[in-house]
Length: 227
Ligand SMILES: C[S@@+](CC[C@H](N)C(=O)[O-])C[C@H]1O[C@@H](n2cnc3c(N)ncnc32)[C@H](O)[C@@H]1O
Image (tube, rainbow, N blue to C red):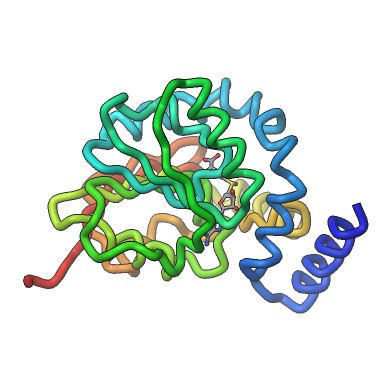
């Protein structure tokens, strides 16, 4: 209890200073939020997110890496024959992903690993996935570069992320709501998710925007140099 309070105070101080949450702060947030995460997402998942996850992840194939796998909400949407590795900063989130995998009868390997410094060789996965993680990670460009690095040249990077929308009024609202979301979930509401993948050297093959552009489904390919 005391630790959660201290973690939150540290995060609020960081917000006041205009800093981005560190990996340790994000870990503290999701250690606190893990027990309630699925319950909190129940309505958005049923209204829209579940449908978008299914739509995105039908494109996953082969050996899959999911970065920021959280409680494993995406697991039901992968083809049963895809071997899945999931990484996250938060052990309690990963414990829930493992429990979900068990309930689904799926074999999943999970590890506490920072997605911005993946401990996997170059070109070792066919599909690399992130959903609702670019908003939280300290440096989204580093995360995307790492995703591209570990993706095979013929593979795919699949993203379902939220950020700035396409309407000024919506973006005004997002800016107003952002401090609260940062303090509670270390979640940025105003990152420009459409421009990040090309900046990280990924080739965007397909992009769909939902909910006034706030949610983006992105299919990209890595842009490896030959050799
Ligand atoms: C909002 S939750 C999303 C969870 C899940 N991907 C989903 O779609 O429901 C963000 C998750 O990303 C994790 N995360 C944030 N930054 C990370 C990083 N750099 N490396 C690994 N995990 C990270 C958090 O610990 C948390 O579990």
